[in-house]
Image (cartoon, rainbow, N blue to C red; front, side, top):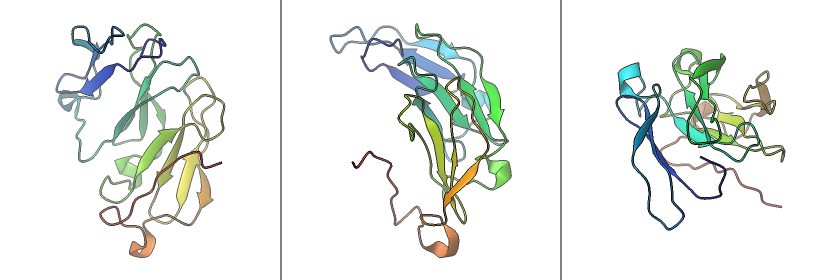
Length: 168
């Protein structure tokens, strides 16, 4: 979370997101509340609201992205393990648009090679994408393909897996 190349620990608990920074020898510092959002106190639930850490701005620091009821929320990393307040950034990929953890996997990965993670979601009848602008904002949602979607039960979450990786 600080851009030093060492994995830190972040978890979303009752009060929000908590983090412990890696000191470089496999030992972590104290656990601190770093975002007063994305927790159960704010209405976030594991069975409804996926949350991820990914670099959304190309600064090699993990930002927090959550798929909430209304859509996508982001808390950008300040570069030192602290975060800006969470903000609503995209009216899609949320429960109100029909996205369910039990049916529709969503991922936050760099699809364009620009160092900034994009959103890809395996929806009801198509696979959708929203590309990152490099500032932690996302553009219009576009259909990538009609394959790999839940439609007709061809790709149910409980028996099929979708993965995102660089294969070439």
